[in-house]
Length: 102
Image 1: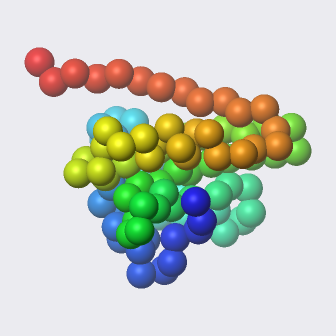
Image 2: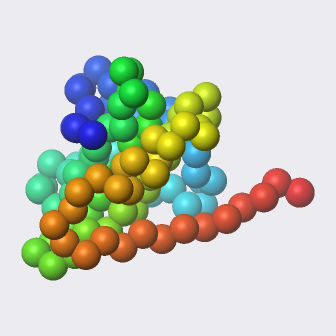
């Protein structure tokens, strides 16, 4: 995992918008601005090319994964699990939600 290159940000936006219902999404541009203030990381998930991302907020005592998504075509290959297993030196908090289309 690493910070996505500038030219990959639109791919991250596409994955973000296709992976989360609108009611669960924060404004993507606001997330980018928040990252610039140094309180969060936007990390790309790679298996060769960009396959997903994680948006992580942190402070001195905890890491909070706010968003984690893998491109629909790359799901089922353990990339999201690998991102969660990524070594953090602080306690990790992950929230989940489940939606089904009925």
